[in-house]
Structure formats: C-alpha cells, structure tokens
Length: 459
Image (cartoon, rainbow, N blue to C red; front, side, top):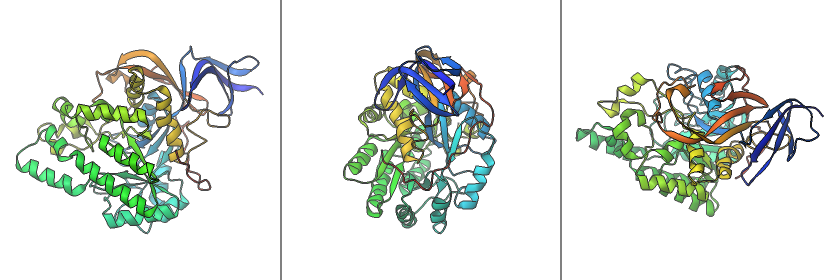
C-alpha cells in the first residue's frame, strides 16, 4: 500500500503514554502507526523535527455567533482561529439565530455552515422552557451531539429551564440514552445579588464577580446532580469554575451518577482581581474566583476531576464590551478563547501542573467519547480520522493581535507569554495550519453527526 502522507520524526502522544515513531495516512484515515518509517512509501513525507503529535483537539464549547450575529464572529474566521489553536473538531452551541430547539432549527444551522469551515464540526441541540415536545425528536432524528440547557438566565431567545422543565428534559434524555450540557448557576441568587449591588451603586467589574458568588454555582451543581441521579440521565456540567463544584461532581461519579465535568482555560488563567485591569473584557459567566481556587483547579485537573476542557469561545465586538467600561452591567458576558486553549494547557504542562497525556485525555480522548465521536475522532489509531495537533513544547512567545485569526479583534490574553504552542494542525490528513498561517483549503471542514446507531461510551 502506498500512503498519501507519512509524518515522521515525532513523539506520538496518547492519553496513556508516548513513543517515538511515525504515522501514515491514506484517504484521510490513519493507515499506519510505526516506530520506524523503513519500508513505507508515501506521496509526501513530512518531517516533524522531533515535535509531539497529539490526537486532534476537540473543542466542545463554542459560540460561533453564526448564523445571525456575525458582526461578532462568523464560521469562517472562527474555524480558522480554531485551526490556529490546534483544534481539529469543534462543536457549536445552540444559541444562534435561529436558536436550535427543534429539528427544523437544527437543520437550518447545519445548512448555514456547509462549505464554510477549515476544520470538522458538529452541532449541539438545545432544551428550553418551551420545547418539551421537541427534544425527543431532536435527539433521535438529528446528529446533535448533546442537548444544552441553562439553569439561569442566558439570552432572551434561549429561555432557561425551571426545575420542572429541567427534570422533564432529563427524563426524555434518559429514555433515549442522550446526554445534556448543563450551565449550573442559581438564577434567583444571581438576581438577588445584582439587586443588592446595584442598589449600593456598585458598577465596576468586581461588583459583577460578586453578583455570581461561588455558592450560586455549587448549589446549582448539587441540584443538577440530584436530578441526574433520580432520572438516570447523563450530563456534562459545563465551565465549572469552582474547586468545590468539581469535588461534588467527583463524589457523585464515585457513587455511579452519570455526570461529567468541563472546565475552561480562563478559569486556569485569570483570578477575580484581574477584573480591575480588564473590566468588561473579562466579563463572563460564571466568573473566575480567587487565586487559591485557580490553583486548586489545576490540581484537580491533574487528579482526574475534570473530564473535558472547552474554550467557551463567545466573542462580542469592542463597542459592545466598551458599554460596560463605566457600568459593568451594560456589557455582555463572554470572551474569545479558541486560539489560547492549547497554549494555556501546554504552558501548564511545561510548568509541571499536568502531563501531556492528561491534556490529550481532556481535549481529545474524553471528548470523543462524551460527544459520540469515538473512534472516528479523538485518538490516533488505525482507521480513525487522521486529525493531528503538532505541538512545539519549547516555543515561547507572547500572544498578540498578530496571532489573531478570529473576527474578534481583542483578547484578555494579549501580552501573556506561553511556553508550548501548536505549530501544525492536520484535519483528515490535510494540513490546514502551519507556523502561524492558515494553509488549508476553505471548505475542507465537514459536518460530523453523532451516529444514531451507536450508544454513547463512558470515559
């Protein structure tokens, strides 16, 4: 067999180990994994110069703002940004226009993305207060990778679920072996704190952080776990910001509850006091907390309390964010994060906080199982898609506007130095990013549906 491509002189990393070797690609799939390239013929041989080759990163938490809100971001720029961050597979959250709450709106979003991506992509569905009669069909008849729901206010067009609706949605998903994504914050606690702080005339970034206290997340996680245990449903708790929340999820897992934890790079990077510098440009929900919590998150990530990492890429225009400069309550919640997910984690590897194997576990292997993509995605094994993220662990540089591929022109990460960067991104055997430049063909990225005939696998 003549290979299409042969990637040589690399260290191949999995979630359980690493070895020096090469990877051969045929028809977009992994065809050969070997310690030596001797005896293999290929149309193109790519020498990786001793760098590390990881299974392609999967980002399960992206708000593309497309369709409908493309003044903030669009699919073309976002998938280019993802590629430059080493991400080979991205999953769109359902709060677009139209919001994804039934089969028709799901199909409309999938159609809107066709032919516009540099990397492969999937699409989450949504559960709101008013679509209880739609979720069964949405899960069973589309390729939706999860069903997303909020326990607190998000946006007007995507109403959060009260307890009765949430419980009913989870019963539906349990019946269908589906999986939910749950944003866990107590809406009434947040509203109470906002009312108190605003009455006191507090309008700065620290006031916003105070309006989302850690116990608002912890209480909601407890309630979600209780509902999951009673219904037998499975769910990923997204963007867990508190170490206490991660500990609650781990205790529930230990007694058999089908609940999994996602956290985000910004919680591993920023602390509450950073709001004094960045103001509205560091406003997101839930917010970051104190330094001791940030350190605990890294420690718990290393210990296995986190199953997956998502960027929660949610960009807004500079003008929209600037509205919160003098009054934080006027700024929207969200920051960009596609290009910095990998550097944050790779820098953590270099600092000895996690291993490269742990990074593969939470960015490739586990997401592929949780989102129904395994074994097509998330691993380097014969027959899987040839999706690779090549990283230079010795490359040290500051992140600046010159690195941007996203449509969003700002980032709270600007000026931060990271050691360890993705330098090559390969999607189904085709190089789409190399050394700072998008080199892939526009439209190469394809929609990947969750197979409806395969059960979800556990991690």
